[in-house]
Amino acid sequence: MTEKATIALVSLGCPKNLVDSEVMLGLLEQAGYSIVEDTEQAQVVIVNTCAFIQPAEAEAIEALLDMAELKQTGQLQALICAGCRPQRYIDSIQDELPEVDVFLTPGAVEQIVSAVELALSGKREVIQAPLTYIYNAETPRWRSAPDWSAYLKIAEGCSNRCTFCTVPALRGPYRSRPMDDIGQEFSSLVKEGVREVCLIAQDTTNYGADLEPPSSLAQLIDNLADYDYDGGLRMMYMYPSRVSERLIEAIARAEAVVPYFDIPFQHVSASVLRRMGRAGSAQTYLALMGQIRQIIPDAAFRTTFIVGFPGETEEDFNLLLDFVQQAKFDRLAVFRYWPEDGTPAAEMPDQVPVEVANQRQEELYRVQEDMSLANNEQFIGRRLRVLVESKSEDGEAWVGRSYRDAPEIDGEVIISAKDNNIHEIELGTFVWTTVDKAEVHDLHSVV
Image 1 (cartoon, rainbow, N blue to C red):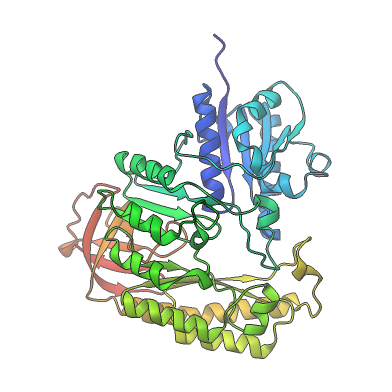
Image 2: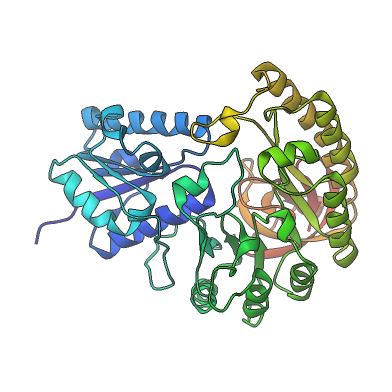
């Protein structure tokens, strides 16, 4: 029997893309291929690309060209480009990237084994399929995250029509997984020892609206709360107008669900939001956060904003600055607006100069740093449950995350022992610590 090729995968972009990467690797492992983490040891490399905004596209091109060099210097025989970039540039992608053997669109994820076989046979192909695919609990996954942490995709695609966003065109309409199927995967992850499960979708709060009969994220939470699980269940990517009182109360009731509200507001000026194709205002958003804090006093908030959107005035931006100071977010990300081809916003008048958008981004981050430090200082003297994930470089402390910290994007909790006598802690376990120092992004604590 001929030994099959070794395969490595470079996953770019969001956690939703990472799940697709893990599914592709799972299908390949099931087909007998060997998975390696070092691209220099691989005979086939897959780059799962993001094409959401221009910096992500540039990162994808750089990664593909870097991998293409291994064809000349290493043992690489075939290069595959998967994900959103082939979908976005389906008509020109082969001419644009002659270094790549096979291109695979998001709808064709389950055809990855065929893609590898074609690439190894020396053929150049574009494999495209309708944007209807979504994996299920029976689909194999080769999990790349630490053993104790996993993303669980509850839906694919998006049916919102934000004027700046390319996701509906790249990933198709919103489609939810059946609740029982999600429960089956969640149960499997728990049995495997996963201590934190992050539920993800382009908009988790729209979960179930397309099912028959319709369901909701609140019902899904109630269902998952019935499982025997003492780890952490984290919700991400909540659309603000769909965060209902019923959902807030479901989160408050479920012991395993961490009180972490990742709500991308994008802006707070009503006029900017209308041009974005979104509802809401500074007043309605503050009211929503107030309602959440009334029901869950310890709720942590993360959001994202876009500055420099077409037509954004100085008055609009000042309104955003004032809002951030009132809202007191735990975590905040700011993106400069990028005019993406094919989106309505790219054709709008009154495009904001890049230098102005960059200045606004820097100023908003400066304001948020003060808010972040003030929030973190409120935790000094408090006890926090921390998921331990690594040891510090000097070996004198442990590093982990509290309920306020999503994987890779938020802060950390650095854990020391009293009298500098650090004891062994098993990675992937929870410990209770007492916070004794606060920084802008991180907390320090002792056990």
